[in-house]
Length: 109
Image: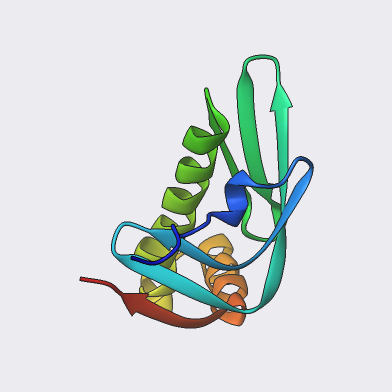
């Protein structure tokens, strides 16, 4: 039995550098690591990545990390994979930024 898979989004106190993001059965490998701002404000935890306009939160650090991963995955599925003609100008720009980040997408069983 191997070591448990670590989630770098849960390990940082101020920022997390990650080279992949996983949600559900998908793992998004990045061309270069990105820095995610992680902080607590009041009773909520936040994970933010300005380049993709992601600001996710949760009652715990784990919930916030999961919300971040879900938002990242949603951008991939609902914007980055859609034909430009079906997107508004802001979505096309967000798609361009996402595609610059992603090296590969793998689906696990």
